[in-house]
Amino acid sequence: MKLKVLIISLALLLGIASPASAAPIYTFPVAGCTVTYSKYHHDYPAVDIFAKKGCAFVSPIAGVIDEVNSVDKWSGKTNLGADRGGLSISIIGDDGLRYYGSHLSKIEINIVPGYKVATGEKLGEIGSTGSARGTKPHLHFGISYPTEKGIWWVRRGVGLEKGKTSPWKYLQAWQAGKDLKPKVITPAVIPAEPKK
Image (cartoon, rainbow, N blue to C red; front, side):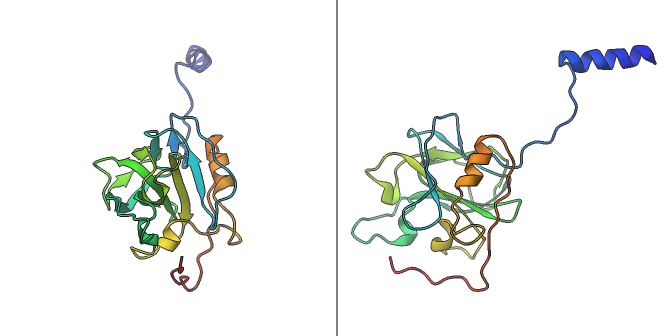
């Protein structure tokens, strides 16, 4: 018995065996690249994460692909809200929330609505599509409550917690390796489509 305890203790000490640990629930949505981002977005609660073109956009949580826009239809002449994201992907996470990334340069071929993704799985690559054309490559990142398809003004990001909070503090936690679940307030009635 003493020999068995000694062997197990030595194995743990030498790193040959390790106690079980849970995989992270959340991860930062850009992998393998240096990024910059700020606390505030121009006119609604979301974050633009700047990185080099081609950096990996990864799933921040396990879930199911909800919507995929694989064709950049944006035109500066019409500036339609539904087209501003260019190449984009939304995921319904296992936590029940929707995560959205847009302005991508590429979407992985297997990323289609209904596909089950794992935390950290590559979804696409950062770019400057949609209304980001001509700007520095970045990932527009938003968190929202799920809606029917096509409700772009919610999909792009809504206020978290008290209705005006951006995803910034969650991104900070995930980047530091901490699991912090976003708190989203779902209104009784979905807001009307904005005019701009």
